[in-house]
Image (tube, rainbow over all chains, first blue to last red):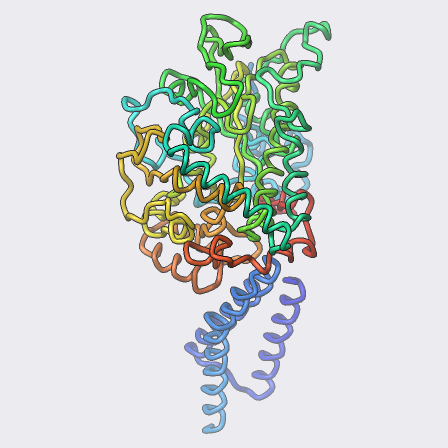
Length: 90
Length: 482
């Protein structure tokens, strides 16, 4: 599972860097931090979600999306909005 | 000259193996597995302990050897001799009648966790213990394997470290999870019972002889030799325990008891062929209290329900012990923050149907009854309440063990984060206990919600359609190559 997740995340990061270079755009330092924290939380959630399902702990699996997954998604959305609005202004 | 604790460096070791040229990759693999050659050799086949399990000079529970005396195990409530000493005949007859009625009614009604199929699993897992069945425990073992003399050679010779590693490897191979070793010194002798829990009620005696033996009245431990107590833990199935209250839980416990009997017999024969003695008990709880031996030899820490809680397997273990004259290296107690965590948790107390486990934050030196052996500051369990309820639940309960925060499979990474934090600081103990509740871990059953109130575990029957690992346990815990 982690091999596939690694491939997907790697491809996404490469795509992002390619996109930034193409449009001559970059992230601020705090946007990088917020985005990476969000990504880490999502990866943490994915591991624990599937781990909990393997443990037959379905409530725990769902709770991970609520407790760590949702904040992770919010942080990624914040990063996206910050960059999108900055790009729009420019 | 001993090959152990030598000055051979890892580089020399790699050179000797002729694979120095294998490069950084090989070195990295080796360094991930063991820190030095001695560490590798003395570890045997056991998985490396997590970094947050620290060795300690003393077990984390407070105890006072001057207050501890050899205990008569016939006093405990789960001895057939126990209840008449602490409960009136009428009361115990009432409990037994409820137990018999519940068993008959629940089987007949096919209550979840108490069907004929579930009962058969429990009886099968026992393997006819004591009948005699497939699980015969004995003082000196089967004694069928050849001795070194018979093979025309001399007994096995090795350093204590070598012998410990060899024994650990053999026992892992026989099915055990881990072993702990204590020297049978003057203090540890106090942990050996005077009489066992179940018949035959022969006395455990220390005698100035070279060889252990038994006769009609006693099991004799030889005092002339330096002896070691080997505590053996084997895993129980968490899939069985999480069906509790049910007979599958009891089956999960007895499955391990059956395995342990085989492991003991195999170890006794193994040691016999090496040229050494191995004295074990005649039943699962023989010789002395498992939690004491296990905690003092670093297999885990004593916990709130006075069992031993292991860092890797939680409470999902059953322990047996044997005494041997094979020279061994004692293993040290551990501190993984477990005892400190129990002060702030009490999840087992909340789940206890009979409320036999104290809820107090602090443990106590005071024993609630003669079924306890004093001399340690713990949360003494009220054995009368506990055993009466176990009987009425038709022989077992296991809710305290299932409720424990450490009773987890190890697939979700969060468990290691929680356990390593608990080991490092007690600041988040309460938070972790609350989150454990919120995430739905443990058991929904307790004093107000259990089969005695007509509430059964509707999910218990899922046991029969689960993907079941061999023996119902994950034997790869702690190992990296999966």
